[in-house]
Length: 295
Ligand SMILES: Nc1ncnc2c1ncn2[C@@H]1O[C@H](COP(=O)(O)OP(=O)(O)OP(=O)(O)O)[C@@H](O)[C@H]1O
Ligand SMILES: [Mg+2]
Image (cartoon, rainbow, N blue to C red):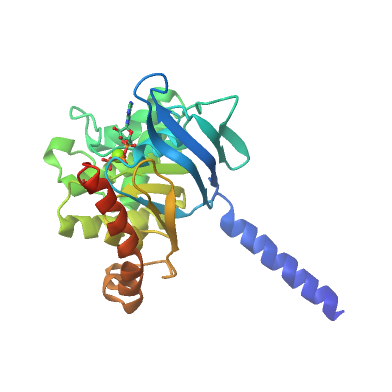
């Protein structure tokens, strides 16, 4: 009898766990990926036997010296560029591999670029609703309703009818992220989204991103040069070698989520910074000595 109760309890727990992870899809498996640009000519190797597992719903931060190959890897996942060797899977789906060097770009993987790309002639709300209307995945009414809801849950109410040019850079960045999430992607690919922001705006943005993440639980592949940003946001921080890149050190950030800015002054945060700094510095020095300035 006890065994039956225990077994039911176990099954209930399993069901609960499955419910909690329902919707958190988007595990990425990168296996021995190489990327050589212009193999017949100058042959620049940007990525070298890179292997990396990113769990579904995980925030994976990629840190590495300028020019080491971070964006190249992101472009391979997004399907913008081919790879030269290796394989990349999204959940059980082969994105690219030996017989298919370039992944198909798709709505399951959305990129937010360094310099943003909102249409200046559309309001923020129109910008957020634009994609699904264009792609025909939602009616105009549905898209505007969802855009309004998502903007409200990202604390962007009040900014809907402003134009990007009338909006602060921090709000613009949030609008871009909300826009990227409109089609419920599995993976959000962020290439230094906060690079141009001052440090105060950045820290507000970090909390805002986590807030959006807690509500949407997509897998996040986030490139940054900022180690503090990486440890504050990430479940995992991957320090890349200088070009051609591959993981040099992978740090599991054992600070529980949800996190807020108080984490930055905690003992554990400082310890993790200390633990990682040396690896980052070492690779930055190598890149510098090779004449590629740190970005
Ligand atoms: N289309 C291309 N053709 C040839 N070489 C390229 C191309 N794109 C990138 N590279 C080279 O590949 C290397 C890696 O570039 P990548 O942009 O991936 O680096 P990164 O780590 O993102 O750099 P940053 O931190 O400055 O953004 C660099 O040496 C770059 O010059
Ligand atoms: Mg880059």
